[in-house]
Image 1 (cartoon, rainbow, N blue to C red):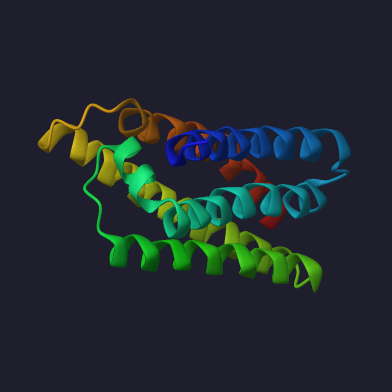
Image 2: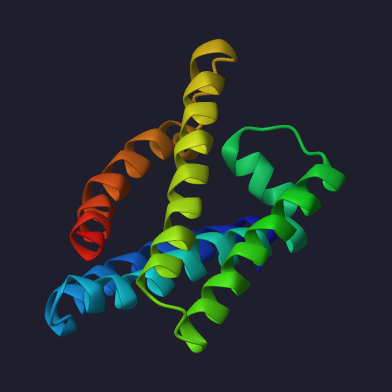
Amino acid sequence: MTQKQICNILEIVRWTCIIAGFNLAYFLGQNPISQLHIIMPWLVIPLAGLTGIESVWFGKAASELSGYGYNPAYQRQSGLNNIAVAITAIIVSLFEWGTHAEAAVLMILLIFLTLSACNHAYSAIKDKNYVLKNLLRPIMTALLLAFTVPFIIRALS
């Protein structure tokens, strides 16, 4: 199996986990706080954790799929940051640090993804980087925000 194939599988796993997380939150969550408790790890761990793994161990293929140049030191550092966010989500969940901690970790992920989506849009416009993954990032991030932010608002209200 090639590294690009592994990256494509990781992408499918990420989105499968996100869909599963939303479904679990809707069907098992009894109130907004329990829904946030369910959704946070199902979004943060796959999005940050798998992206981190992809960046650290499959960085060259991941950067090619996004239409970016490959910089192993930066790719590794960025990946380690994503892994740190995923580990934080695991710690917050395991030790039940509460709704505000869960919301904070989820907000870190959403802010990063929003800034990353802006970077992808900038790359598409300025650098004419029309790779599909690059073009889809802003759209998918907007959808993720539209579905996730209401969970956070309801849980903190």
